[in-house]
Amino acid sequence: MKIIDAVLGFFKPTVVEKEREVKTVRLDAVDSTNAYLRTYTPADDEPMSVVVADYQTAGKGQGTNTWESEAGKNLLFSVLVHPTMLPVRSQFLLSEAGALALKEALADYVKEDIRLKWPNDIYWKDKKLSGTLIETKLAAGRIKDCVFGVGLNVNQETFHSDAPNPVSLCQILGHEVDKEELLNKIIKKFSELYRLLEMGGYNDISAMYHEALYRRGGFHKFRDADGEFDGAIVEVEDDGHLILRDSKGMIREYQFKEVEFII
Ligand SMILES: O=C(O)CCCC[C@@H]1SC[C@@H]2NC(=O)N[C@@H]21
Image (cartoon, rainbow, N blue to C red; front, side):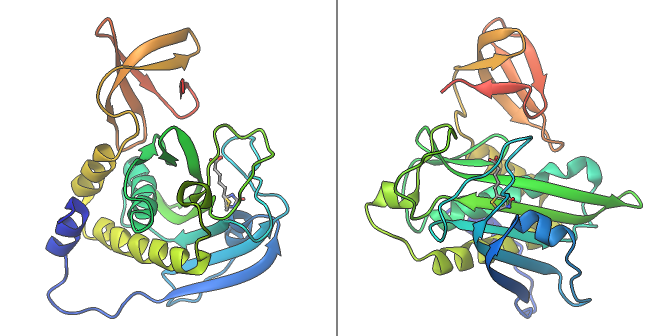
């Protein structure tokens, strides 16, 4: 039994709950699914909303990057949740849960070599299969809204943008994949992991995330503002900081974009 199934089994409520209703909006084209959900008003009884598009005219990547994707080929979707139960200082756990949901859903297709590259990319070997853009809105000291925007390369066979190391499921498997089926599996896994967060399973989410980390264990090459160095991952804190130990034994702490993996 995989750790994730054991953990989710342990947290299963004694009374069978109604499965969480997930409202899904399907669009042919949109500027950005993240932007769509930022102005979306969910119904009162809608704890989780999903929007999926075949094409984005202004897909956003991390920082100032754009996200390019051939029309109709890949999964481009965003999920809106309202995690008011989670302390703001621990909000990176949402990112961990999202990345784990993708990894778990992908396990039905690719048996090995899928890892989570800090903070939340999905890598197959040394290639990027998926990127996630998370945007949160705080109100009264709580996380009112959290939008997870996922770009997952599914059936695209050639990549023309300058994105580093892209790969698609179709390139890995040698055949096309049903995007709808894959999306359903991801949303189901995400619902389960989100439920675990609601029940306070913070240590379990964090343990599963660390277990699945890309370049976990041993020294690897990194680059920060001072240049290249060899470092080993010590941990990722609940606020998302990456802690590395360099070859001289010095502990170094980074926010996203302050350090890069040399691949
Ligand atoms: O740079 C990254 O790695 C993050 C990319 C996130 C892209 C996805 S595609 C669906 C959603 N809508 C957007 O505009 N961006 C995210």
